[in-house]
Image (cartoon, rainbow, N blue to C red):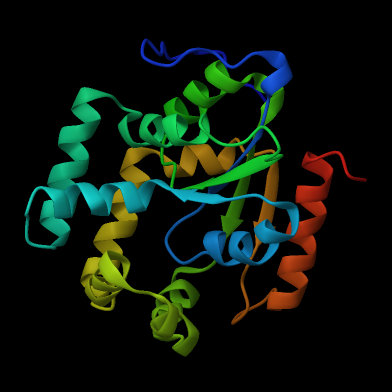
Length: 223
């Protein structure tokens, strides 16, 4: 699936055909299972995970701002005024320094079609794939209290989760991401996964990971 519009990238040189790495964009609203699946399956195929959200949180911290939803939105909006793909471009610079032996990478947290376009412009249409993750809002909110998540989440991400445990903050975060365009990215995805494990249709974690791995093997041409 291709997008016709192209975003100009002045500071990044286009990667040559022989150096192509598979870029797997994980798109979905918060707690839909994007990073959970990537962290399990990624190491099996030497695929690192990058998150635009981590870049945002680091930017907020580096500016010395109090960690609040308002400040997160303020920093995000300011950076997007510089470039709509500000945080994606930062990740691209990191990806371009990876070893040529890395077959692919995951990018989680892309919210706008323009960010996918800039990846396609840089890496090539045939090297960028979008996987959309769909889960009910009720299920996603309850995942914030998952003991494994609480134990594994540290630093700025833990502070973010603490804020999101307030449902009003969680709802605002969802609306903010939809406002940025994450729904459009999901609608145009090459692959779709349901990660709903609380209400019908029930999908277990093992089933999710099996499906996710099947997609990754297809992307990497291993099947």
